[in-house]
Image 1: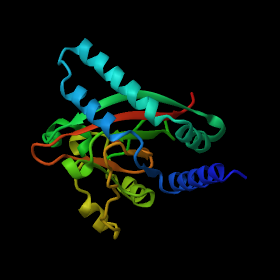
Image 2: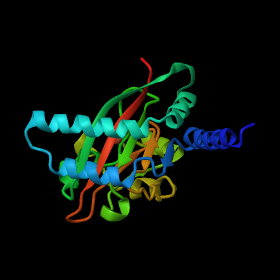
Image 3: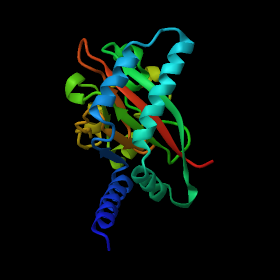
Image 4: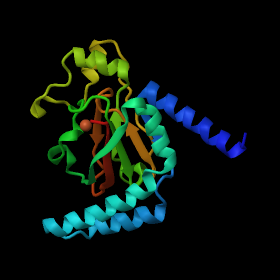
Length: 218
Ligand SMILES: [Fe+2]
């Protein structure tokens, strides 16, 4: 067997196993640093006018798609979703500022609602080390215990940004899961299986991401 093909298959098998077991996966170095820098520049210089902003976002998303949905990633998604197949939906450019606790609903612990089995794919255009903003998660087991204990209310006002007390009451570890994402890295995870929240950036900093939802085919 060709050694290159064998290597790709081993890498794919490892990633698939991680995604199936952990429901999260960190893929490194997917979008080149220079492109990330250019995309951030165009995001930060977008006109506030809706139509122009929309056109810039479309172009940013197109650039990201070209780098992200390579044969390698598509093969992984094909294997993950199996016969059902998948589709990539609702691409979005996001900027999270240091006022996120009051302006961004996803800073509290929650589970997403929608098409079960979907994955969120975040492209981090800047590094967590630069702004401190990250996606924090709890593993499947603790998420299920917390869910049964009513820790993820539907009402945004009732959601919490700290579940330490709830976890301690359940005698579960309070450690969250997160990755040291660098510019150009991808976070792929199941927002229906893993409780998650966005940790806001440090004062004066912001996070730039492009997000895609990968749903089972419908
Ligand atoms: Fe979410």
